[in-house]
View 1: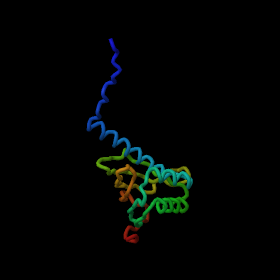
View 2: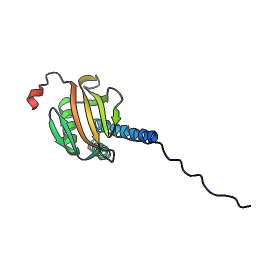
View 3: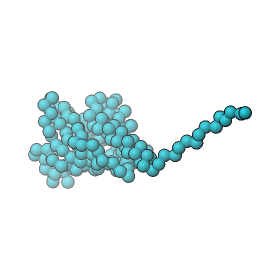
View 4: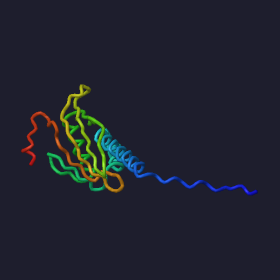
Length: 152
């Protein structure tokens, strides 16, 4: 008798399994995005930007519209230079679906005291490769003394 060496056919993924994998990948991209905002060195910022941000990423916030990873790095570094230390922390688990995400955050400032500076929500669009192509920022609680009208 001959022994059969046929391998069983691979099982196809269900639509739910494929969607779950996509959500996991999108959440991983959002983790890279948070690490980008918290990165302390330029090489680390560049590495995280390359992983998380699409070329020409657009960032829309009350302070203006920024384009490209370098503009986001400059904005982050100017903020830290002015405020001292700062850290972006998630307020809850991001929500994702259909290449969109909602990320609720808080910025903590100070030399170890963790004073809350502001809270907000980023509405994020991911491109087909899963990288962030645009961010629209909403302030849920603006910093003390912030005048939104001054930035329009």
